[in-house]
Length: 191
Image (tube, rainbow, N blue to C red; front, side):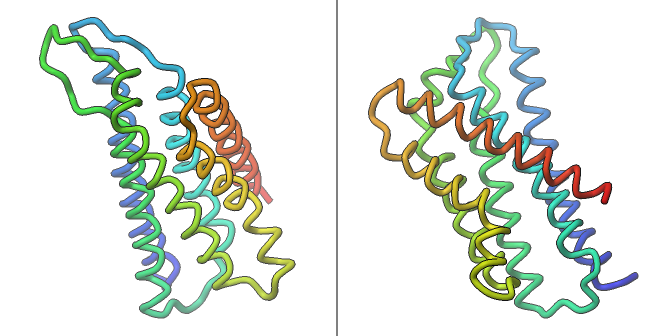
């Protein structure tokens, strides 16, 4: 087993756990026996978590599959980075409600949205730092960190948003951004 295969196995386990949490959470929403009050904003942030997770997994493969050595700090940095992504995926999903209890995703977003937005913002900052760590100068870093830079700005605005329209706009913007990121990173796998 190469060093990359070992590290990628760890990355894949954490990614799989986060994906399981997201999928299980969505299935629980579908199975819920009580009424569900849906939220477009929460749906956008859930979409963002899913697309960011898949895009990040594809990005890790395309950026690092040729790496022959990994230092302990590099491995720990990757594990920290993915642990924050896992936390985002976990926090965006509500706990399973009691049977026949109303599940209000609008209320969930209002009460807990700042938490998962903050963790996503922290993830974007860590992405920029990780990319700076491996970049060979400012230009290459700026090119590779463009999605993380935009996400930091969008989520930063979302964290400061006090109006519903601005919160909705940033949620849609983040969902679109992470979907584009996922598509770009998945396309890089084929080249």
